[in-house]
Length: 156
Image (cartoon, rainbow, N blue to C red; front, side, top):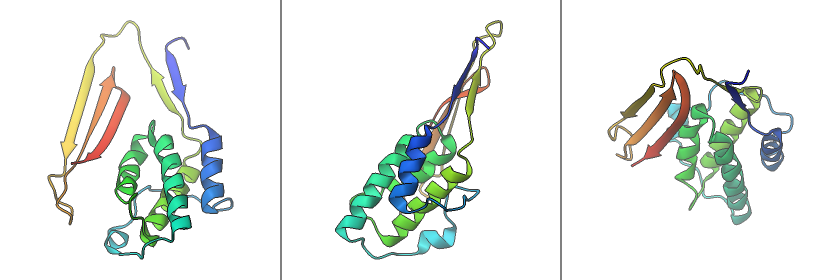
């Protein structure tokens, strides 16, 4: 189809992430975010070697999330602890990696109809500092002809 573009994560990135985190035989999970109970857990600081592993894994996860709106908020939250990652952050990163394992066959498909009106829609939302840290998370989505082109999630 001349008016269709498909985007899929390169499997080498998932393979790198699985190897880095020791998840070669791990099963996937159905959601990228951790539970509210896990959100309250305070882990201990990672040793320097594990902190480096966390940062490397987080970079791979960020790259994989660029085209995945379903992973962007999790990836953004993991970035907040890059300076001082904890054991809890590493568990969260592994959860996101397991979600990528579960969704490794997902393909983002863009289909355009050249005869349709070229309409661009945008959606914006924010949680207005409802988190315990009193920081807002906002996000947006941009659509062309009902096809999602761009998404983002950001802590303010």
